[in-house]
Amino acid sequence: MRAPIIALLAGLLLAGCASAGLQSSNAPQPAKPVAVERLYTGLWHEFARRPMAITDGCVAGATEYKRDAQGRIEVLDSCRMGTPSGELKTIGGPGEILDPGTNAKLRVTYTLFGVVPIVRDYWILDRAPDYSWFISADPTFTDLYIFVRDPKMSPALRRQLVQRAAALGYDVSKLEYPELPRR
Image (cartoon, rainbow, N blue to C red):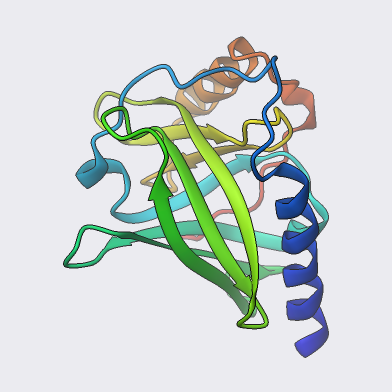
């Protein structure tokens, strides 16, 4: 049990070191401002993602945002191994908004082994007007994530979200669609 967690954390460390503070000139910029209280609260389900070693075997991925009394954002990423009822894996850390006013760029500092910081930047490239979905990526144009509030969605919405990611310049043929939790 300890080996998969260490592998997950080591992968985050390597991926975080590779992307923190870097930006590709090809990376799309966020399309809309974000209302902090609407997007950075509650549970979001991972509908699609670009493959990464740290997510191999992970399904039912989710990110939960919580805000403390001072308004700081806490991020908890999770997934289940193999099936939506499999072993739960989590990693979390504080988030910092990098573009106050627009609020579409979030830097999360995860901690490996309680001491090694792993910094990841997530940009909200687009979102639904009603905050039912968002498309997120890192500024290196490498990682891509599509999150939804409700894991049950219509085939039309699935197509729309993938088409929007393609319109942002991503190769959507590389997306993987992990099994979502049953509701």
